[in-house]
Length: 435
Ligand SMILES: [Ca+2]
Ligand SMILES: [Ca+2]
Image 1: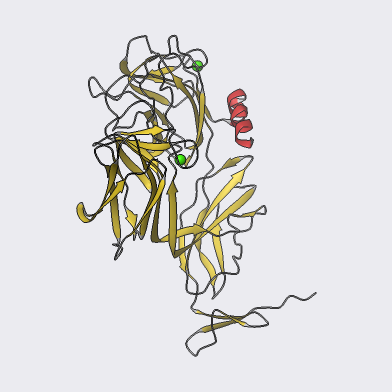
Image 2: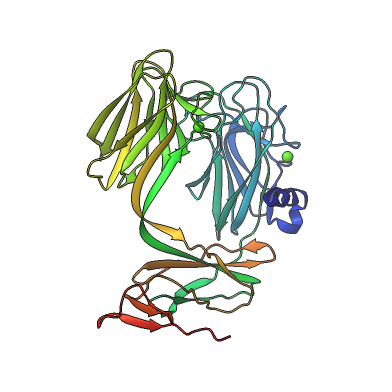
């Protein structure tokens, strides 16, 4: 709700909160697709476009820009906003244009790094005037190029989309995080400096530890719903998956949807998982018996090949524990000669990962330049960044500082924590509260 209200505010009072806006009222776009560029209505910003046209009969509000497709000939459609003075949040609206039934999907990159992949939309034949609003936290200073296009991997074909009401906020100059002024067994004091007056400072603290990570893909988002397609990409558990001839289906074990693999050709290729321990999934056959082949890949070589016969017409749980988990592995699921339904694919892996502390981010309203972070573990790596806020705007995150707490024990007034005092360990006597 809060997000919704904020977007409305941005769109209705652009000059109060927003730094930039582009409504496509003064462009050189025509009804023919072409490449070109024009000066934005926001001074200093240039809009560069490839194989685009005006919104024609498929507007959002008045004029807009229409992208067509990913085909190489004459060039894949894209629109770029070259913004000179930094971007905080970037918001745009999009809708299906024309009436073809091909699915629509958009990708957004910031300085060539992908930050957003849209859900599929507009994939039933006929007009669809649904307007989608997307806000992306960019928080970058200096020159920023934001590009809206189709993912590079999708097949040829028209996937017309109109874009309009592009709005972005400014970004505050980020504070600079400095090395901690104090590090002990169970706490440290981060430091930072700044050259602007801010309303508050936020301190983000992460620890960095080995963890067991369990992720389940329930196929509620990201799958193509139009027809079987080769090399479809989607952000599923663990990152980017490649889906060949996999369709979204209402045959499911949980939620509203599952994945349907085409007979003989359905394939899911996972991203790399760190120290994967086990894989489980629910599967059932279509009309006929079929199977799933699971290939465990390390550096593009198959190290394990398992076949699961799928002969039940109710969803059934299949589990495979990976012997001697490799440091990094990728998985390919492939189905047999008949249609297969799949849902709730779970991968358990291990990894030294950063995780934000439960009390983080810490927020300080005063303009001090330090803040003690307490109750930490000894001999553990921590990271922190700081971010400034003023009048509803945020800065980019600062640089990141890494530190390690000392190896030692703590006397909390009643007992020793983290072991017993040893000659080579630091010991901390925590002050007792009086009162
Ligand atoms: Ca407009
Ligand atoms: Ca599901």
